[in-house]
Length: 224
Image (cartoon, rainbow, N blue to C red):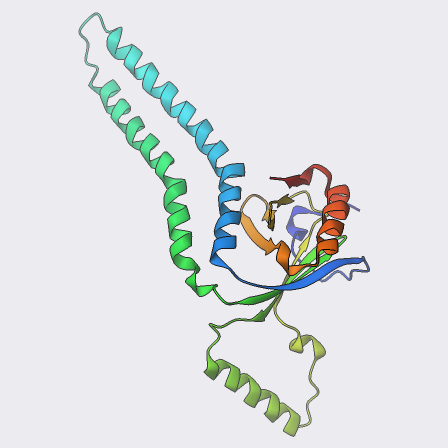
């Protein structure tokens, strides 16, 4: 049964698929930036190239209008369009670089977080095991609330004890994986990026991920 685009993330469906590999890893700014750079090369730069071709065509068209003007008519509008195209072209060229710098400057909040990645034949589950930016007060309040619930005789839902997780259904056409030298980079609809370092898994698990997911995902699993 086909999965709709809106079902890329977990929708509550039970899964009985096989666990291929699991491992823990710490968030690393360098790894995230590597994954984002691969993302830009794969998707962003291609779009920018197409946009720049259109800008150059527009500039050439207006230059032709200027040089072919033999009746001394007003060409100020053509000059204005040329200037606008040059400014737009500069903006399009600088935007990926500026986005990269903004992401790099904002990644301090993710440093030190610990995640667990579970790779199944039908999904990838990424759980947050430790977040250094959760305040001590929040943790203390959570512990006090649990203690109060125990005193009142309330039963604890086992689901509440599980760490927060993102579940990605890899059988959806909007999910792609690019394998780099030391990373698995997961792309969602060419918008969201998840970076999983290979060091989170044992060597034989890395080989199993490569073999199984490349067969399951086909052209949506690529090597960089």
